[in-house]
Length: 103
Image (cartoon, rainbow, N blue to C red; front, side):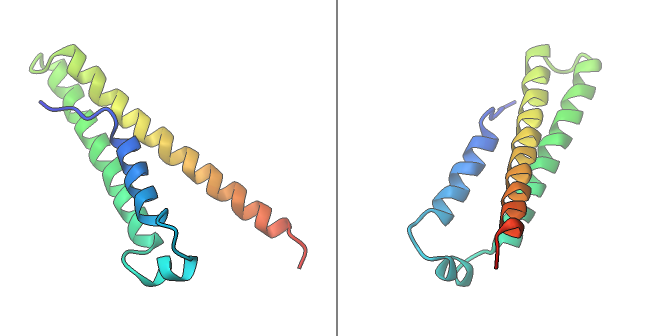
């Protein structure tokens, strides 16, 4: 079974490559996928990682999978969830900063 331990880092790099191309916000919003599409992709990826983690845990309990593979799958899912939570916290912090700005 192939395990990608850097799924969250790869997803972040892909998102940065899409949004970090030096274009203006208007150009980024008008072309290609939007923020909602990106969120949908991320949540789908986290859900898939959690599902793989659960399946690996069950396979490990049934002694159908090596313990190292089970731990790797669970660690991968945990890393992805922690990354999403960190990004969420930064978005909330940015929103709060914007709300504090004088008009």
